[in-house]
Amino acid sequence: MNTTNPLTILIASIFTHNIALVYILGMCPFIVISKNFKTALGMGISVIFVVTLTAIINWPIYWKILVPAKAEIVSYLIFIIVIAATVQLLEMMIEKFFPPLQSSFGIFLPLITVNCIVLAVCLFMVLRKYTFIQTVFYSFGTSVGWALAIIIMAAIKEKLSLVGDIPKGLRGAGITMIIAGLLAFAFMGFAGMITLQ
Amino acid sequence: MTPIFILNAILVVIAILLVIAEKFLVTYGECKITINKEKILTVLGGDTLLNYFAQYKIFIPSACGGKATCGYCKIEVLSGAGHIMPTEEVFIPRQDRLKGVRLACQVKVKNDVEVLISPDLLAAQELKVTVLKIKDLTQDIKHVFLRVDEPSSIKFKAGQYVQFRIPQTDEFRAYSIASNPSQDNAIELIVRLVPGGLCSTYIHDVLDVNDQITLTGPFGDFYLREDSTRSIICIGGGCGMAPIRSILMHLAQKNMPRRVMYFFGARSKKDLFFSEELLALQQRFSNFRYVPALSEPKPQDNWEGETGLITQAVERMMPVNGSTEAYLCGPPPMIDASIKVLTQKGVQEIYIYYDKF
Image (cartoon, rainbow over all chains, first blue to last red):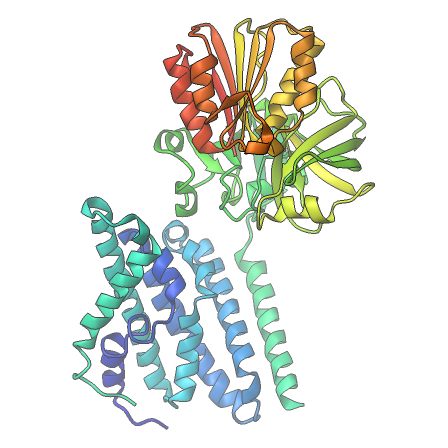
């Protein structure tokens, strides 16, 4: 098992190992849903919720069921199915118990099922042999990092759309990729802070 | 063996959990959908308005199969729909939002809902048709003849469209009816091959004589205003020929009671179609004029007619006339440019009817 301090993992996964800006994962919503600050915030919060929850559910399934039964080979399938089911359940619960939340962040839930960072977090937790506590910190940190990145992106794009004069050929995904590149440079500044393997 | 066993076991557990959750969490009970304050549908809540309408054979236009990407299924919801979704905001301008316009595919029925649907839409029905004949009009446009089997006839206004359901999918595409409304047991469509287009590729490559197809319709507020006596300008490009041909055939049957000028824009001579039919119409009626214009005539075309963009032809040929109404059908840039020219020629904007595609 991995012996890194969970707090270190938390900080690392938000800043130095940001999943959007360093690993370039979860790009589809990062490009498409970052047009306005409010929706980016909604998407960010949903991702934090779903990623943390699914990692917490998938950890015991992997280490307590699949590993003892030597069935690691089906882990990808199981992870994806568990993610889809969790999202479904979550959607039903939000609709039933918190209807006001439904319109602000419930609609992002179905989109998240196919977001690759949800699966990536489950795979990394296995690859790096995180303990349960480490997984909780790691999944929370990673999703907060992703939310942070999309919120920054949305804020920049919102301002750009108000005052910016973007060359025609760069509008849309083009300028988003350039901004993402610059943000990634900025986040490289954190790199000396912590080193993880 | 174990991995498969484990996989199945986990799947079963998840399925059971979901079923239980659905039973306890998703219960809306019976909901009433009131349409235009008269018709009431009683449904078991949980699905979208669009799906309930389809169950009760009310056909709202929709091309994307309920994914909020086409924006066709707009209806007015008076009460019971909850907040507008961010997925809908793109399609609904601010003043419409205040009226309660929503996309039927995005409104989930959780309680009693009251909606307004225009009577024209309520007249739309599901049509089973059989392909009689498919003819090439140009290298990328086909003329499709369909016999209406069920119900035995179709009633539509000249200029309206039907939705073509691509077999084995939930996808629909809209095509204007190109035939005379008085011929009610058969309709004709004109389909241009759109590169990469799902439906047009299907019609061009797969569809064959005697195939059975499902259509819904008729739809659309682009149709000939028959109570008017104004003279008529029609402007069409490409498949924009279809609704205008229907309008012209209808007028011809009534002995062309109004002055009509039809401008048709194409690239070169090989993109023109129905020329003989339209020229014959021009011979028959002195107050009908057909003006084709080619934007890039080829030397071998020996073209002596109008050249340039269709809007330039309109500018040159059309007299300034305040009591004119216009029917435009074609690609959006052509329509926008035409509206500009027409208003300069004194046509009032409320009398310009158009169908962009």
